[in-house]
Image (cartoon, rainbow, N blue to C red; front, side, top):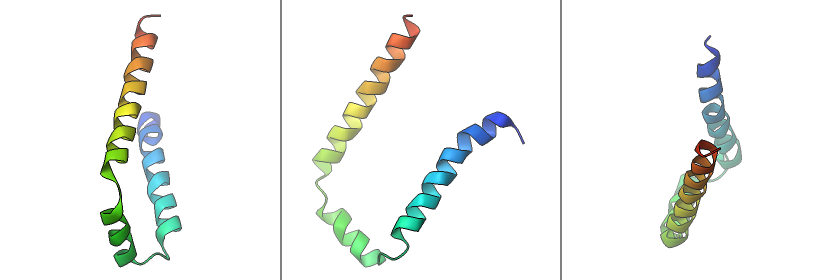
Length: 64
């Protein structure tokens, strides 16, 4: 198997496996209720900060 494919897919497979392990005993209805109650502004802020972090990191790496 190609080493690059393994390096790219293994974190995704690991994340899916861990999510399944953590959420296997939680009813789907409860998950839906919790997602409806979530404050999406905090999720948007976290996404924005993560995007800025990676953009800044990439810019610093390119300018070396």
